[in-house]
Image (tube, rainbow, N blue to C red):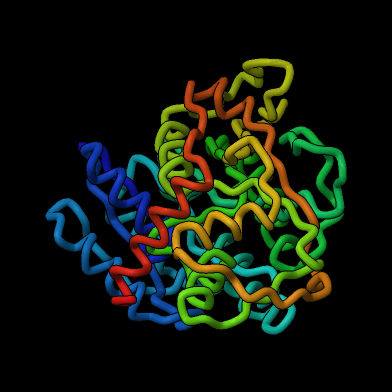
Length: 335
């Protein structure tokens, strides 16, 4: 039975990935700090469901603590590590940047050092579409220059990519970075738009719509994202530097690759809200707002490399994905 270590396993994405790997025959070690960035009860429920599997074990510690990752990896010797633990959120990074330094920079450095001392077959690490920053040419490709981040959150994630590449080069560590594009679905984070919109619409309260609604996103359903991550586990970046195609992002000097995981299409924010309205059975009260600092008006993933490496193309429509989320929300909160 292959063994996987997932950092951030009680988070939205980590929980779904752990469930998926367990269903595919993995033993999973889940590491999570259970921080109070949002309602800890949601994280506790996710973890409790994972613990129903005898193949799952939880470790509640912080990745920025000295020795935690080193000792855990040295003891467990996982075959694969998926690093999802991070302080998330574009807007919160303006309010509390120190937490991003601690988790995203120091925590990731601790992980790289731990894997250097205790190698695994493949290290996969989460980045974000936010690293594309002020780029306007779309769809975003992994080979595009990404040097104009517009939030400190995005800057820490771009730093993670650079840190990981240096370790892949220096120590021959096979590393894949994946860039997420606006992930949504059941058990999502309460600070995300689909969660806030659904809660407000069902309560008859107004929703804040930034940039006066002139926004586009490549909305990616959680199941599609998790399928992409699991399939990338076996797409280990080679050490010979031989790219798979002319749009492969494989480094010429290291077993390191960046892969977009997105739906591959853009959806207008108004259409996204309309899908939530349809699933809720009522219209939203719209409060039009200016653009938030650090945000971008549009994202769109070029996912050709994901398809090349895995044969998988995300397929879930916003209408189906939102219907699933709203059904979960109504059940979980008894609305």
